[in-house]
Structure formats: structure tokens, C-alpha cells
Image (cartoon, rainbow, N blue to C red; front, side, top):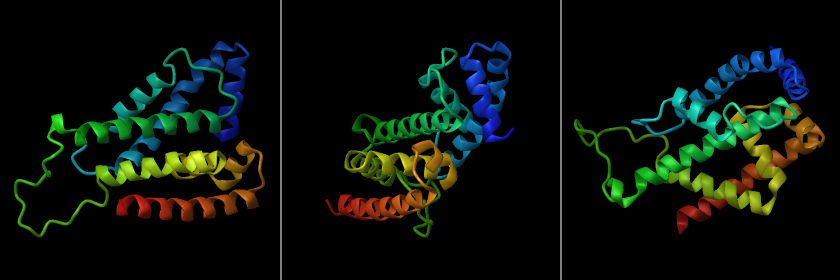
Length: 191
């Protein structure tokens, strides 16, 4: 189904159409599952959290069966992406906590000293989270744009429509935000 179709179903469900509400969940679930799988692919190896569990946890945090009134597909997926991001951050913080052995470095049982390092770790995820929080304080619109583009996978045209800006402004804002985040993460790593 097209993004416009999902938005129409969301609006019809808000107006009280029960059949529209029943059709939304299977459509949204598949997209949430794809979003969760993409997020989990960027995580460090050895995660105990699976994409399906991430979707279910995010769904519960969004209200479960008592979903709020969503104005658009983009608004719903923006909230879902934020919920998933927060869940992953909480898991990273929990793994890093001292009471969970956070002071020890995790090493493969068959480590030979030539293992390829994981592309990302909990520390990098937490730095990205801190940088995103700082960007939100610096410029909330640019932070929202990054979440929609990077975490949800919306196009710049969709994001521009959602934020009420031109696509050209969205492109400039994204370039600014990427440079700002790069510098902020660099600053955080030097602390």
C-alpha cells in the first residue's frame, strides 16, 4: 500500500471507521518490522534483542491497542523510530552498567588477536544518542529531519511535506545537521 493509503487509513480510523483501524495494523506491522530489522543490522553483534521484540516493545510504548490519533504516516513512523531508538539506547546503557559487567571487555572465546572489530559498539551508539539530543536542543527541526531520514528512511520530499518546508530547505538542513553531528561526535570522543 502507498504511503498516502496508510495516511488515509489513519485518518479514517481517527474518524471512527473500525474496518480502517483493523486494516492498519498488518500494514504498519510489516513496515515497523523492516524498520526494526534495519536498526538491528546496525547494532553490535551478540544482541539479545530481536527485531520482532523491538517492534512489540515500540508498539507498547506508542500506546499498544490504545493508539493516539496519528495525523499522518510520517508522524506515526517518526514516533515509532524514536521509541525504537530509546529502547536500543536503554539496552546499550544497561549492558554498559557495572552491575552487568560493564567494566569488562567482551571478548570472543575463540579470539586469536586478529578478530575484525565490530562496526559499532555501545559507546558509539551512546555518543550518537548524546549528539542527537544536543542537536535537538540546538535545532529541533533539524534533529527531527535527521530522525525521519536516517532512522525511518523517509525521502526528503516526504520529510519536507511533514515539516512544512521546501525540499531544497530539507536538503540544506540535512547537510548542516550531518556536519553538526560529525563535529559533536568528534567532540564527545575527545572528552
